[in-house]
Amino acid sequence: MQEIKVDQLQDLLNSFAHKDVYIHVETTNGSYASHYDEKFFNAGAFIRNVRLKYELGKVVGDAPHRVGLKLEHGWVYVQGLTHFLLDDQNRLLMAGLDYTGKLAVALEISETPFTY
Amino acid sequence: MQLEKERHALLVFPHPDDEAFTCGGTVRLLANHGVPVTYACLTLGEMGRNLGNPPFATRESLPEIRRIELQAASKAMGISDLRMLGFRDKTIEFEDDEKMVQLVLDLIAELNPSLIFTFLPGFSVHPDHEATARAVVEAVRRLPKEKRPKVWACGFANDTVERNGEPHIELDVSSVKLDKVAALRAHLSQTAWMMSDSAKRVEDGQPMSDSWLNVERFYVIEFPDDNDHSLDSATI
Image (spheres, rainbow over the protein chains, first blue to last red):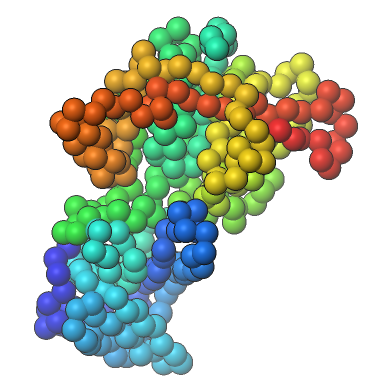
């Protein structure tokens, strides 16, 4: 993965528009956050291999970036993205890596299902 | 305390590296005594957060990295039979509970272990740890008393000692510390920060004498003698 280049990422988001795609969305503080700091309110969400179709995908903002997907009946958006990669299976992987190299958020788009 | 000669040791943990942190030295000692060791590792730690910045992996490539690390770590600990069971990280507690109990019962039926290592229910912090430990304890509880393997459990929640007292078993694993370090080092994607910190300590003239590297501690899970299926029948 490399740091997000808005023009390149926008082209990639455009290339998946109007297609049936599978998405992975994840946001996390890690399972140990409340162990190290008992006052920490630990929350997160995980979605994998939900199929959808978006009519408009857009990356905006200075780094860390935000990406929004406009669907026929709704939205997907993720904030805090820093890195992206079109991998060898033609999957668009986007991640938000914090200053220590830990993943904080992810958005991934693929025309084929992700593994389990 | 000295280890007894065990028939077969079974490890049941959800994530690659759980075994090295909790019982890596003990397992190496058992293996050195000729005890066959099976490790049932439920997931490949697919949801590990440490991908680096700049990143060395993606969410999708991490599992294969951790699979290779797990194989190398298992070799360092003398684990003869490594089984990667294909569950997804952070989903164990959402699986069917009875399915997880049956999975452990099937392993016990096949391997006839005399000793099982897992986490301490209620005191193992991560939801996967808790779900794994619950399945192991429930599976063993269902066995007739004379067939039950010992269950040695590791707890590390902040209130573990306060609520349970000191662990029942304390083993000196300093003689195999280097093997334990090798296993931890093999899990590089998870332990690089810690190993580099330890290396720095050695360079600074401080010995790697951290007590957790030299000593491993376990709670022995106790079961009722009557096996009467009462609700609160498995306690520590």
